[in-house]
Length: 323
Image (cartoon, rainbow, N blue to C red; front, side, top):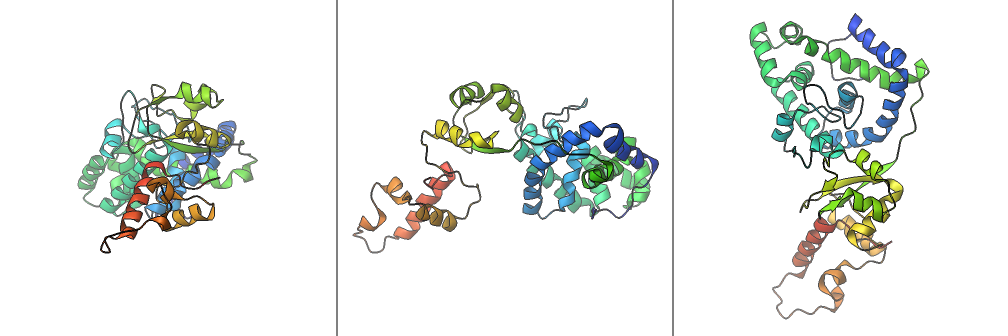
């Protein structure tokens, strides 16, 4: 399975966990596999972005069975089961209005960065995973008690749950990769996308105006605890069924002909896309076509200003192409 581990997990606990996924919990696993088809592309994106092993995505299976609104008895929440204090340290908002631990995109990037930092500190994936489970402080303490940074020596000084954490991860990876050999079939998954929302808006109003069920929006967006989106300059991602994305964009932005671009879209590519589709962003920004502008001051750098204005436009609206 090409996991980033050196020590094999082949004990009885690993075998029991695999049986839990593929035999006892078969129906639940089939639902999880359907969700995996929905969430794994997002996980893969952030793992590539931060140059991390793609197989770390199986960790979320071990943590939450890919239930986005999962909350543990210890108050860890979300797909990656982040604790409130840890999430805030990673820059996530966690309060009575927004809990970004339940945000698919924000929580995933936070978890990936956290794993990257832990691996940079311990230089060992077994210790990094252990620290993700029980905290870096507990792992440092265990290393001191063992008198060695080798995982095999450190392991017995870790909490019992953490000692089994690597095995749980291996079992989750096995279940996702070999479910077909055990006769399991993934459930069909809902295809979703997101729209950036900058102004304060209730989910109920979006549902009403866009012919959506409020229950659907709440299920897809558990991060909006009070069922409304606060105003934000950066914008919050609102997950919607893909076939409703254009309707939601039109309602929120007031225009039927805007296409959303990824946050890190290359400016030249975006400009070329707009030109190809017959949309003139210069006219939108300046009120006249670019070639009609005449400059009295030859030292004034129009290209620089144009690109600055366009970048501001793209960053604020991320929408430049006409349908």
